[in-house]
Length: 293
Image 1 (cartoon, one colour):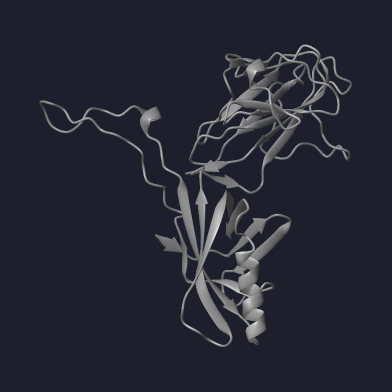
Image 2 (spheres, rainbow, N blue to C red):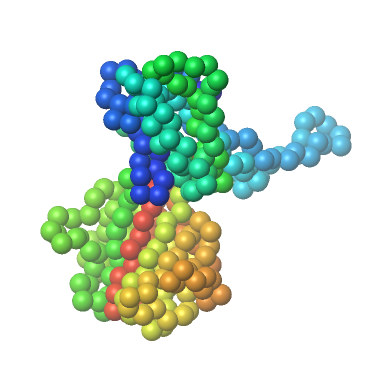
């Protein structure tokens, strides 16, 4: 199924290429989404579900919810390059072809929906020749099938013994943006609440900065814990990726120090409260994207 977005932007290296969604929009890169639209964006990827037929009786055995999983996502954007001169059309094509052999991020904006995927790109060009026009496809293969909200929820946890004693409000002290909030009204500044307005489970990414001599413990909803038992020093932050259940520091995998791996996750339409149960001099920055399948 294909559809017509407001616009799309392709990101790679330090560049971005815009595909306008209609003729009424400006085309700063001489590129637009053609009338064939974008395929594989709104639909789910192919399901990877194996059913066992009942030996006696109708149908197959029931499927557990955690057995319903999906393949990688493939997105095909039908593009058109337009220019008053042939050189403008060729330059527009070069902007797309330059995304080859590097990781890319494709962002699609449609009304209030602003999401992106990541993967690698292939480009095809239609053989028909026109002086000021060229058409083709940009295909992005995404190992991760989910689409993520472009705008992330971000917040900081500060330990009770930390210098700020609570959540970080930024340099201007204007408050945290929705939907982050305190877990309790007073005495609980080491709590942070996250919500997921998407249609698939969302996993936060935690960045531990500062000095944490005894590691860090994050408790989710007062129950299960994520614990890393190593030492964190100032200047070399610890990255805890909850989706991959890995830990890294300075580009080196340090997952061996994960002694408890109950990683936080947020169900579609749900919310969780994170509690920083460690003592240290620093902060834990939490980032979460609404996640869609």
